[in-house]
Amino acid sequence: MSLRISRWATQCPIMSVILLISLLLCDLSRADEPDRALRTPIAEEHAAEEHAAEDTPKPKQTTLNWDRANVGLAPVYNDATYKVTVTLGVPYGQGMTYHPSDNTRCFPRNLTLDVYQPDDNHQQNRPVVVLIHGGGCWTGDSLMHSMVNGAQYFAQRGWVCYSINYRLHGDRGIAPKGWPDNRPTYSATRDAKAAIRWIRANAQKYRIDPDYIVAYGGSAGAYISVALGASDEEDFRDELLDNPNEKKLLENTHRDHSSSVQAVVSHWGSGLLLDLLRRFDGRNRFDANDAPLMIIHGTDDERVPFSEAIELQQKYRAELEVCTLDGWGHSAWGAKHEGTPIIDKVHAFLTRTLEMKPSDGTGIQSSSH
Image (cartoon, rainbow, N blue to C red; front, side):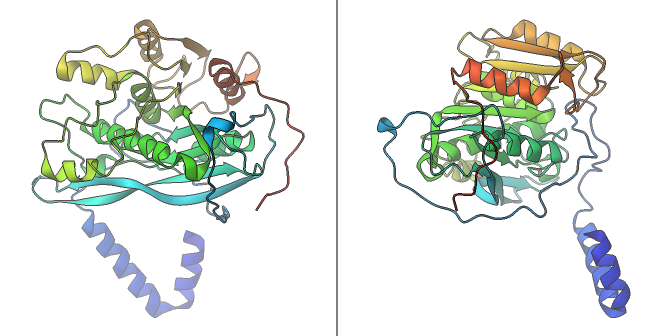
């Protein structure tokens, strides 16, 4: 994109000046934000990931009526079987952003997600993967390369995927009084829970089974995913209901639906958010009823040390599987475990723990639209 702008500006000197002034004004409007280059070492996603969906086609959307009681779970496949249609920037709610020094000055911002659907001839009750990007709560979005690749992978095999955006450090979302460190993680997790409630509220529109929702995150997104799998329903939801600004937005986030997930995949994450909850109110959230968890972590990770994975493994009380990546560091998306790409290991874990029986695909099918 920058190359195209540069050529255009060279050919149009007057417009070049206008463009330069606009960019300077934009920078000045953000001058009160913290320097995003000063990222914390924990929970930081690989900063160089590319945005990989610029040319993604926007499909025609179809809304169908269906009777879930008379339809079984849609099939999933071991191999890439379907073409995928993508809808970018779907609003799922709003989150409040605040002035850096005056919490009475605030305004809501839209929260969005991207939807990846298999062209599966209108199958009903499709399982769901919710992808949560990393970036240390400082940067990143739903179009990070790892999230796009993951969404394409699962959608080609029959899953409906939602890659979500959430508020970052620069949005200055608030936390409840007495909340420990890492304030941005509170609003980020609040938003992720709102996204899952929105997904359940729109189950019929997207033809999904609300009893088969997976949280899949990398780095900071893994912190959030682990919290989704083990926290209580009211956590990261009700603590700010006594704040009028927050209450009016929370009341529009489908609080009558559950934000629970049925499985969690943590790529180089930790249980930090659950530790913050315990420090906040003194209650331990880990128990045998938590969602099954898969931990994938490199032994040489210098951003989220491997010790975090060990600690989480020791605390977790529900079903757990660990993939140790010997010699790998952070954001090891290209790694293999015992000769198998880690995403294939993830798919096998999910189908097994959710008691699904995947079939072998027969190649990419024609689009049904």
